[in-house]
Length: 207
Image (cartoon, rainbow, N blue to C red; front, side, top):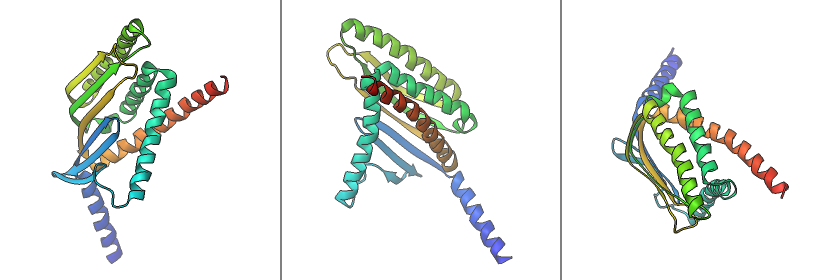
């Protein structure tokens, strides 16, 4: 009987913890950043100083590896292809986990993207193609999620060769909803990554 009471109390605590609402701040500006807080108290932050230099180096290497994957796709397939991957990934997650995404509150959404091309004409064409992907995606998010954008800035950059991208947002939801969606996003991204990696490897072999 005592064991059943203990198990019941533990399950109740887990359920209550799962219902606690947290705020997740996600950002990217040359480097990915993540901050998790509850009741204004920071639980985790990628900006916190590491106690050991070894851990810091390992974290930077892991982060660089992930970023290089996206950069590799961008360099070999182009900006439109890269954006198309993430737009389709977003739509897949929203459709598969619709009940969970409805529980999210997405606030302070900021995004800036400079579009570049091989020359002025190509930049203009690429800019149009990118806008035709991103703005419908924003409308899709606004329709299906509790979403408020603060600023979205997409512009053609005729003076530089490399695109510049930054994004940040605050996501508020219960711990259980955040965990389910985080695992769902990781799984869907892994499936997309396998397909893209195979495509890139085949392209390199055919060179």
